[in-house]
Length: 290
Image (cartoon, rainbow, N blue to C red; front, side, top):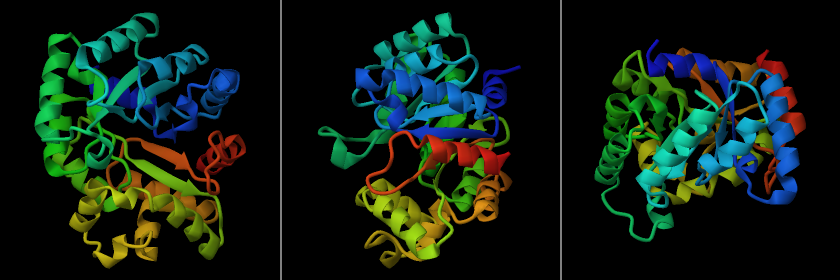
């Protein structure tokens, strides 16, 4: 079995995307470990660590579990040197084979002081990883546009697009072909009331609409300038969030699989500010997916 196929089998159809699980506060370490173990018992195949995460964030969660895959979503190539990234991967791979996947991304111009030529910089970073011995099959890329998706196909095990729609997923699958992993992130609001569910979603989405790469991607997908303003239109909210009762959410997740996703990384959004470890919500999510 090749690396991409093995990764698909390991992560399964559903995972959890979380910033809270990558927190470095030592006082919360025991709860994060307990939450990771529970998510494994609930049947999720992968934990995707949001923010600028690394192997160091993944290690305690891997040690607290038995089989679940832990990936970075993403590790910024601007803030982690490639040789150190390869070394961190190698250390975990020796101790826990097949349990860690390095998810890489170029982050956002407004967040990076010396942001320049993101595609070329990513190519150079992958070259360095190759020289350090980290195989393409052990890394995935946060790809939105066509060129980065092609790079995910040719130089990685696949793509982990963030803040996308089923239409983007279909285009990504066409670019990637059948073999690479395609694991989009999808935000979930467990609220059946349209007004309050969309309000929760809109408050969370607003921060992302400040980043040009997400806005450009929405425009490529056919949304208008007005639809990506003021927190996003209802059409945009409904495209990038799964909200509603169990049936509606289940159908929305299924739409990503039907469009070509192998795996969907589910980010549960609860209130503003979000709950960093929404454990009861994760239980409800596991139940509706079952």
